[in-house]
Length: 367
Image (cartoon, rainbow, N blue to C red):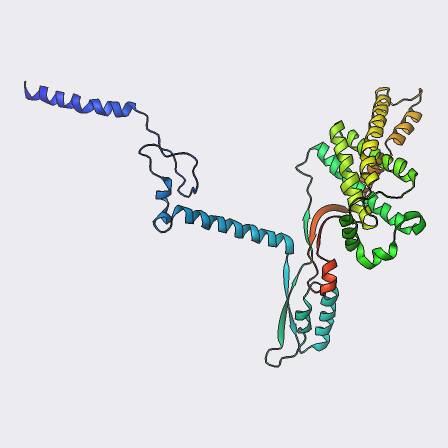
């Protein structure tokens, strides 16, 4: 065998393994070196990604998990505090101007959100350090409610619920103006406890059998339940969804909402309003749909048909009227927002018991 043959043989022997390696597909997968948990077991020969984390040389994997958990909890706490307390302001005062200082002191005292212990020391003169500062935290945090990401059906229901809220507030004001013999409201008790305090008392007392006139319990409340139901049906909700909306509005919105500031929730109202009201509402909805299918005519008259549809869905007509008011040029803007209001920091102990703060929904109009 000559030298050339030996060289060719060596080339063939060394190229065979290289061809096998080239035929094998090699994949490189990215590794998340900061991944703290893994639900899959390591394959044979695979390196634990945790070992590639630079901090693995100093602490264990469990300790690293605890550190990350503490960081997440701390961040959540900061966000919660920011949502609850909102924005704070630092006010610096020149105590040499006693008149101006006492004027500011009186203003902050009326706000009621500055601790009295700090407020009392605000205007004490100090010749060496005449300037003093006080931190005032906004007493209310507001978060606007956006309807941009809602479907047309959802947006319609939110708008109608907003309008129901406006009607409910007006109804409370109207009932307040009625004589106590008609409203059955103890106005002196409400004034003494305050709206929030009286609401808490009535809710804690629990639902009771009320003594209202049968016309109110068995005619008035079912009509209210039917109004909630038909508004939901006309917005495109199903029978079950509309019944759920009627239950929500009659329970949360009215019995445990507006009316609870003056009366203890009623067992009859909690049951009769949504159940009988939904049955009435479905019957009225079906009749109005038949009139629509008949080109809006009833007994051959469109005028009579329109009047009948308005009678069968009076709440819808009122709520649409409120929507038109929002779109009117007189109404410059309107917005709905969630808000949290902590207890007043400057309140005395007795007042603080009745003022533990609250969460609510606000509606703001600008004309």
